[in-house]
Image 1 (cartoon, rainbow, N blue to C red):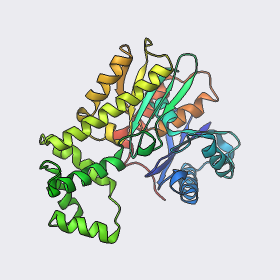
Image 2 (cartoon, helix red, strand yellow; image 1 turned 60 degrees about the horizontal axis):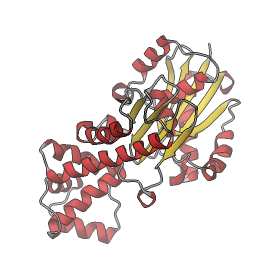
Image 3 (cartoon, rainbow, N blue to C red; image 1 turned 45 degrees about the vertical axis):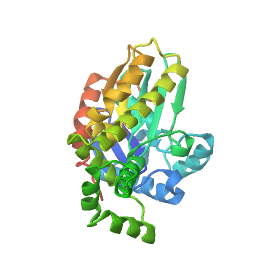
Image 4 (tube, rainbow, N blue to C red; image 1 turned 60 degrees about the vertical axis):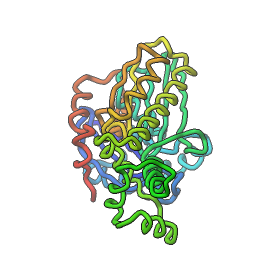
Length: 331
């Protein structure tokens, strides 16, 4: 039996999965942050732990892994790969590849060789490959470098909106009561001073409150989510235009918890409006498999000329976005 290893190392968690040649998951594990930009030793330790535990669960050795693909957040530039190459090499796999997590997200969401992916998880990013094999990434480097949104920044927007409303600089919002309940404060004033006095970090979980408030038609929450959609649309459109994909037929895959686990109807229509202007023939699709499935598929691509439909079906069943999260084996 041939085995493959796929790793999805993100800002909040790292997932490692071992599959056989039929696409059946035989081992899986989850650990913490796998983004070296948030701490090299932290990422190394978490990636190693996830890999070791997934292989232990699968009862396979490194020699039995035909190919391994590491899809890692922060694998953006040569400066990043100079850190990541020796880190991953020390794991001891003979055949492996390191790619950005955008690449595995795209591979998990389309069977075509070309396409575009837009990510909105803890941060935002977009990546595309055209029919000539040319690729381009846009975004992924934070607010100061042109990005907007993702869970971390959306949480800040929630907190900031509550403060502005309390001070009179912003309109009244349902986010106030939701935030106070989430963080355990009785007044905004107490929250304001405690966060300043203690130097507290704003928890990214506040981003989820946007969807709860938007459900009740809160204007502040709806406007923040609308801006998120517009910014994602502009980012994807930039990739499409620079790769000359404006008249092509391809899938645009939406990836990340804000788009796949949140209520994307408050975000996706604004994204789609921008993208359809740039590429009328593209089809928007929400990722239904965990991105780590893309790492597995990329690994399989290295050893086989084509992947059977039954493999895709098995991966879909085993690594569904809705089902997989509760299935990781944590040793």
